[in-house]
Image 1 (tube, helix red, strand yellow):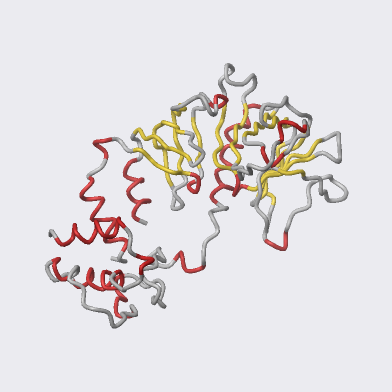
Image 2 (tube, rainbow over the protein chains, first blue to last red):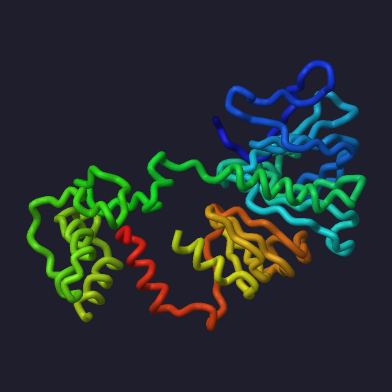
Length: 230
Length: 93
């Protein structure tokens, strides 16, 4: 799955005109809001259209131009908010910021053709502004459904897969499973011991002392000297 | 889950969230979730040059993955306590 910023979207299902979803990957429709206009960046508003909010992305489809539609993954939506200040924007709307991958080689200013992938702000203007809070909440829900993809081990009780050394084979297993740490035959570290014999500190600190240059940095050196002072 | 717990305790306080795109937003911390997604109320943009259009959204939802810093109220954090807790968390304690 390629995650991107804003892009064209005009794939539709036959019949009711709603968008084709990636159901095989579990994408489902969460909310449909008819009569929504969209304003990309600083461009003027485009309407009429319908907003489809799925568990993965939001899709705006023009009601009058079958070929016109936009989509953006929730993974790319950095921020969303309800905007009601008439001085900031003429109509109450949902304001969103889209994460854009900076590409220095592109110079879209000169072509005059809209490059959707460079759009950083998008406003969705429902004709029924009483729906804004509902839309805001749906956006929140969908954002929560789309956390950053991580390696499988992330959600174990320890919650982290910090790498302490290149020799580490066992990931996860928090404090109660210290015995499973692969302690190499490295010189005994003084770091843990100086902490009043607190052995649960000693083991990870031993890992840090393995002679792997990659894991020595200024911060760790400071850390070591701090614990020595205790 | 340390920072999730920590931020939950900060709910109701004023924070400034700085995003990776340099935007800084100040507001009252309304809620936070396990992914450190942040909801702010009474928001205002700290530096209005970059994103003037969002000057006065009142509430906003910020994706955890785009946050660079969360600036805390100076009296809202016990630095030593947090430091020790972070160290314990890092070694799986």
